[in-house]
Length: 290
Image (cartoon, rainbow, N blue to C red; front, side, top):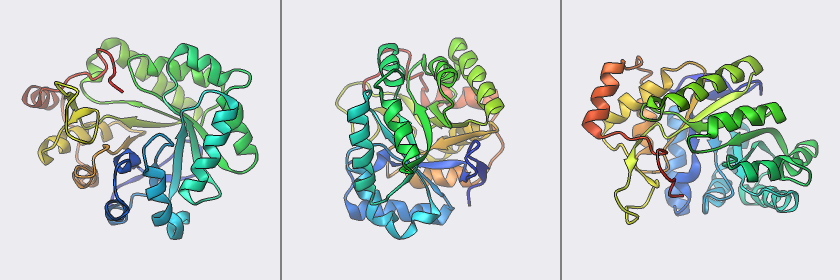
């Protein structure tokens, strides 16, 4: 079983590994049901999806209907203006076959112009707050990619008391001094304010060499169990953060198994060895192909 941790100040004890439902975007219902059943085996009690994850919300809905009370359910809206965001939130509830989600997140809110729109008058944040006031959502978060995300999340927390943040965290990206400093500053702020910190890209290896690549993540993931064990142990070895699973159903059991082992955090020397052996790269050093 995977250990649990308070999810910020929400009052919920979430497993430190959260199911990243982007993996269900192209799945059939049979494939989705099979994958979701694995969550029960490891005690995972937190599902993170998004309106933009293909058919993921549609696949989660039927399976979760009889288990709704057992899971913390999060989704995201990528809309920036009030009207479209309001509509998308309600559409997500329909697709998820529920009358309430636990967490709604402003999706990939990093671009400064989009940030100003979403958090300004008539922006998506107003729609999210309205949904909370109406009892359609319980908590509000913000997510993002890229090298500026940690700094932008700090700015977001100064603008509004978000309940959670989500951003990349792995060995390769943390070798960038600026990103590492921004991440540490964000983590300190979140610890001070009781904000949950979710991390993504734990299992990332490098960018695919071309745009033509196998189905699954937009980056090349680690695939061997021993490599995944080391990468996951390094992320979970950092106190107070959560790890979202990779957007690949074939890798899901390997990531869950690595998380359940609750291994000691690998040393810098072990991570350097993994990096050299697997060719780990910072996915965000250049343009993000998503």
